[in-house]
Length: 232
Image (cartoon, rainbow, N blue to C red; front, side, top):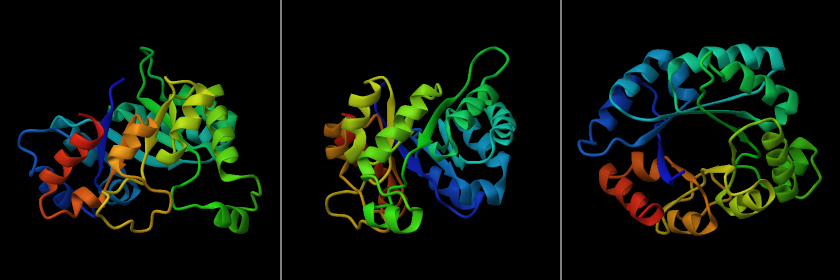
């Protein structure tokens, strides 16, 4: 599977989102729709962006009892998204139920990936807030192994963890990596970050890039820079 840049459209409204996407007259970027936009606009924003020809990563990070997640995934499977996700912390049973719910009657389904640890989490916060005292990388690898055992396609992780995830779970197991900033950019609230070029070197399959593109003076130029550094 080829590498790609996913643009995080973390906007408040459909109007803002579609106005941003109108900048792209030649390319059709892969788009991430997160909780902020989905909760504001509902499924119709997904349908409209699909009508415009974009692939969609629906980033809702489901985490609940297995039966609830299974039923929710069955609903999401009808939206024709290309990728969706859940929290690996919800257990192997929950992830297996998610795969069942996401799989359509014809056997097809979107890619399903699991969040290991958020890129805003570091070792200190994990120990202090979550009472997880194992090393961060060990926790990420354990969650990734659980996701693979449950039949998922990959994980969301830091680009810094991509090599270890691929070593643990295989090259075909996808790493979708936020926490990517240009070398001359602001890190924002991300802790474990790299550049697009470094993410490529580390083996990330997809990078998720938000503010460095969406808040750039020239979003198209910023997107093309990401493509050049990560894909080309």
